[in-house]
Length: 459
Image (cartoon, rainbow, N blue to C red; front, side, top):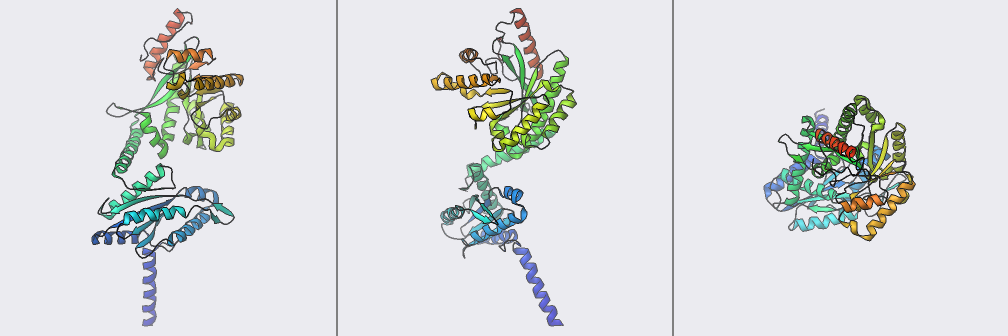
């Protein structure tokens, strides 16, 4: 009896040890083992390197083939990685789609780079799962003891920072930790935190840039643009926070705020006698939202705004990956009496053939066509062709980023309908916009719809 108990106890201890220090799916050392081994290596003070490997876009595999097949992918990759491990190079499963190598050798950083190349080379050929051949890519971040940190937490942090930099640089690559990258990553994290606080404190405001009839100079519409003014009154540039907001998904909340506020303020202006349509940009995240149509209707209903006063702007980059689905969504939006414009035409996947397929009302030509290279003959020929085609398709044409009279005159000669840009006015807060609108109206009336361009571009 005692022998049986002793035997069972030993068996239980082995089971507990295995569960504690080994990954149940792959049989590799787990995160707990990694912590323990890292602490010991740091105490020994011998040089070693940490190689953090992440499978790119495993979520897409789980979503399309299911989690069971996702686990099969992980097991297969674990077996491939295990073949690269040896006595001084241990492999661990960090969790999810991430693995870690600990390389305990002199010149370990150089060897870590060599090993990283071998890891990436494993995925030159597809992995077969059931009847599917999957092309997998991975991203790698490397840190080194004692160069980058002297404690295990610091080493893991530096390796993951390098990993994220690898992803930012296009994936399927490796990066060695660099303190400059670390500072950039820290600033990114701090900005994300500030963004979340800004949402709670309602620090996002809607400014409006006038859309102007190119022949009469009369303001005929406005584009709603988000501006972040922090608690100290500083304006944070959209170029600084929009990429972070898109990456983190916060752009969806910000976009919802802009849509609702633009509808409310446009309704208030309509009640005051200003008969203007407002255009609102839809981000890729918003466009992918299954509840997009409901959110648009909710914004209109809450503001009691007629749909004819709303225009939604989308970019070709937003819709290119799911063209057929995107076309159906656009049709649903237009069916509700809302106009749709294709924004930033000329900067993404744009092609004339692609333009023909889109059920849109308005084409917005990006400032890239009319900026510093405007004088180039080829640019002018392309611009002429785009405007000509759009007019034949009965699309309204709006030019963005107009900054010079020469640009305006050329666009007018080509039949462009409307323009936006600093030549007329920068984006303005609602009250300043209304003052500009009143000034513009008075000038148009006094000149009988001659050139109503404001002489004060910042007013």
